Each structure stands twice: as structure tokens, then as C-alpha cells.
Length: 516
Image 1 (cartoon, helix red, strand yellow):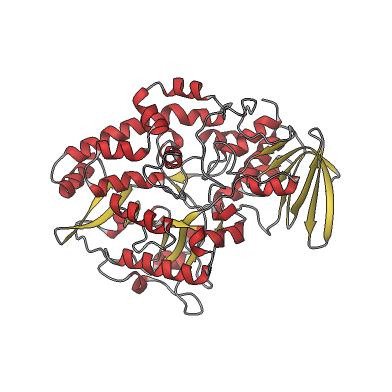
Image 2 (cartoon, helix red, strand yellow):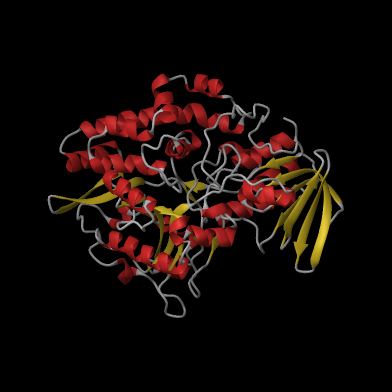
């Protein structure tokens, strides 16, 4: 290790790796320090079940916000694959199991809406709303890798008063209730506003709108795609490009202090052998804002609170559904919504806000291996094994503070019971077992994610997302990555326009360092 670098990057998550690769390819000397034994942060693949050759995307799991520009600029060997089905939402109407399938072509989606609601009005409203969000996606997504616009500039780019009012000014619940009458359809639309975000459809602070916006603009289409080879494929590609460009990546090196006068910085790091220091012209922090404040001795930002349950499963086979009209191979290929009707979501939020675990936890599930079986070893793939990922909503970290282990088990049992309500056989009967005979199932609460990945409060976005325009109080922040120090830039999910598997704040921090 040298004594001084043009840039020292703190943390080895995918955003930090993007920044590292861009800076190294621009000819800058770059050192990346990662406390864990492997880079990747939440964007990794791992084999959590002993004796089973299944490389699961253990934390983050789908890709929407990663721009093709980043993939092209860095010449990444990384691909995504589209899902044939967008979603399936099971329900019971008049005592009869049924559901809503979105995907398989317009004719089939239209027929599914008609089967659920009795006519074509809901489908027409769905198409109209998709056109609205599609317009927003095409106009807004390209701006995410450009200098940060102010609010007026972004509104001019959107160039549609209805789109702007719907997404940026009124609670998203207003638009949903005005356009849709069916409770299930309303719930399916609302879920994009609640991923990792504890909010009601009508919260006046619009945190639900901000979450919704980022979930419908990805790639300029809003499509959510499967990473071929799992999330670890992205990390490996980024590591390869960064090292090929000359960057130094040091794992097992934890940054513990950053001192800077705004022009030069010194980073103190800790390893198993002791402490060391390295000088830098620039520091690029792939940490949370909370951790960066601790490293620099600044006052911390407001606390963050995550709100999700993440469950990974390996199955011997997909379970059969109670709804005979839909094949499980289609239902689980997209997003399988559970207990996510509009009123169910409101009830779960109210229960959690009052300090109780939701009695009917809402969640969504998808099967990676139906779209990309390469994450399974040949033996498991040949025997028809499948993976399932469950992401639970409305489970704020506060609910686990008293007894994380007990609350985790109670919530997991309740979530799986909601899944079983729509299956013709219990999910437990389909679970594979590991080499020790234990079910191949693991669950992570916000507190687990905080402990393992240092996500503040277990928040997957490092805090509530922000609208993608400049804050009036910081007009000089050209790329949305500035901190209190001119030579320290934030490139993690907590940067403006951060969150999700995007690489966008990594790109933007690199542009700030390069003075572009």
C-alpha cells in the first residue's frame, strides 16, 4: 500500500466499486478499504445453506435502476434478464380462489383483470396509469446520471402537469383511489411505494411518493430484471474492472477515522494486525451518512429506520396454488403479492405504527431460478429445485428492539401462514433441507441487516429516499454527493438519487471528484 492516493474509497459495496472503477479508469490512483473479507456489501451472492449448491442473492435481489450507461462506460461483463410475468396476486372472491396475473401479453392481462373485477374498466385504468408512470420514467431516469437539476428544471423535463402533481405533490394514495376502485388492484399499485419504506398511502411528507418514483422509473421503463448469475455477478464484474484499471482493493481494512481540512485528508484504518493511516486528495464514502458523520466527527443526521423482513428459501419444488387457473411457474416468476390488498396494507401499517407486529404481514415473493437457473448447481437444477425470496413490508425496526429473535420467529410464522392461505400445500412441505437436515430457510429483520451490513436502523436505502432534484438549502451540490467538506463525497445509498442497486451515486461521486 502506498502512503498517499488521489482518492481513498471507504467501503466495498457496489456503489463504492462503481466510483472506484470510474476513477481508476480516469487515471487516478485509488485505494478502496472494505472491512469485510469480501467486497460487495448487500450486492453479493452466497451459499447460506450448508451442503446445498445454491448461490442466492442474499440481500439485494433484483435490478431496475442500474443504468446501461454505467455498464457500457465500465465495460462490465454483467447481464440482466427480463421476467416474463410482472406479478400475480392471489385472493378469494365469493369463496372461490382467484387472482390477478399481470404479464404474458396484453390480451392475457386484460382477461385476468376482467376475471377479477367483472369488466374492462380496471384494465383501462391500469393502462392509463402505466402510461403516466412510463412518461415519468422516460423523462426522469436519464437525469439521474447528469448534474443534479433543481426542482424547476426537473419539472420542465417532466413537461406534464398531471404527472408532476401525481408523483411529486399529492400523496400517491390520492391518485390510486381516484383511478382504481378494486381493493386488490389498488394494493398492487401501492406496493411500489412501500418497499423498505414505512409509510401510509396518504402520509403528508410524501416519503411513499419518493419510494414509488424510484420503483417505477428504472431504466426508463420501470422494469425489474433478474441479474444473470445472481447479484454476485455484478460485484465480480465491478471488482474485475476496478483492478484492471489499477485500483487497489483491500479487504479486512476498516476505516475508523477521517481527518480533512477540505483539501487533503488522512484516513485511519484498522486491520487484524493493528492501525494504519493513508493520505488522500479526495475521500469517497460508500458508507451511510450516519457512519460518515461518525468517521469525521460531525453531528449525525436524523436516525434511520428500516422496515422489511427478508427471507431466503431453497425449495425441492414449487408449491401448488389454490387458484387452478394459474401455473405456479408463472405465478412465482414475477412478483407474488401476499396480503397486499389496499385495506390489508393500511391495516398492517396501523398495527405496526401502534407497536404490534402485523397480524397479516404483507409480503412479496419471487423465484430467481425460474428466470435464471444458473445460480443452482447442476444436480439441484436437474432435480427441479427452486429458490424463493420473500420481502415483507410494514415491519419497522422498533418492533424488534425488545427481543429480535422472538419477534423474527413470530413474524416469519405469520408471514408464511399468509402465503399458505393461497397454496394447495404448505410451503414447509416444499422446503429443501441442508446437509444437517434443517429446512433451507433464513430470515433477516432490520436489526439483523444493521448488524451484518451496518445499514442504519436496517434501512435498505440508508434513510428515506429524496426526490431527484437539488435541495434548496444546498444549491452548490452539483452531483448530489457533497458533504460538509469539499474533498469528501458520499457515494452510498444515502446520497441524493441513491438507493437500490443502481451504481448512480458511485457514478456521480466519481464525476464530482473529476470536476465534471
